[in-house]
Length: 244
Image (cartoon, rainbow, N blue to C red; front, side, top):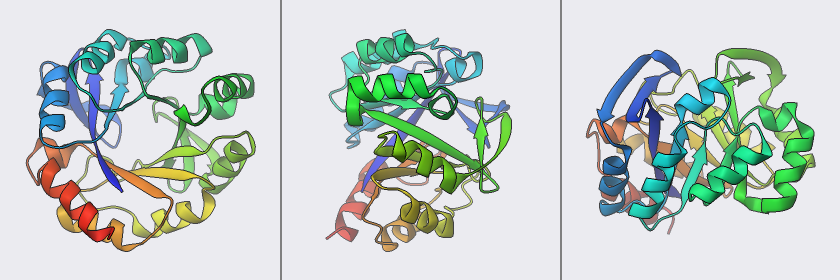
C-alpha cells in the first residue's frame, strides 16, 4: 500500500476542504508546485491531484498547474476534477497525468467511459464518492440513491479496474477511516482501489493496513500531512513495514 498526498487546487492554490464544502477551504500553499515538491522530497511515490475548480465547473481549469507539477517531480500523478469529456481526459494526459480520475460522469456517460477505457485501459480510475452508503455526484453537491456496491458493479462490467473510494462524511475531518466501509468496498471491487477520508494519525494508517485487503492499493491523505500530524516518510515506512 502506498501513501498518496493530496494536492487539491482551487483558485491556483493548494487547499483542503472539509466534507467537500467549498466554503470550508483552508489554503496551505500559494503554489501547488511547492506542495508537490515538498511531498516528493519527503518520500511520496505518487501524488493525487484534484482540480477543484474543474470539479465545480465541469471542465478542467488548472491543467497548467498540473503540467507544472509534472515537470517538477518524477513520480506518477493521479489527476481528477472536471474530466467529463474525452477531450478533457486527453488534455489531462497531455498535461502529465499518469492516471486520470473520472467521477460520476463515468456512470452517467457510458459512451465517454467506454471511449477512455478503450484508449487508456487501466490508466483510467473512477472515483466512487459515498455519503451514507450512496453515491454523491457533481463535485459532491448532488446526492443520488445509487448504492455504492451497485456503482462498483456497473463500472466493473464496463472494464474499469482501478477506483478511488471516498468517504465524504469523513473527508477533511481527521476523524479516522471507516474500516467497515473499507471492508465492504474491498469485497465489492474486482480490481484495486485507493481509500480517502478521515485519516488523521499513523494509528489510522495502521488500522487500514491491518485489514489485510489485498486490493487496497493505497490511501490518500491531505489535511493530516499539511498540518504535520505525521510525515510522508513516517507514513510510508509504516505501510511498508506492515506489508511484510
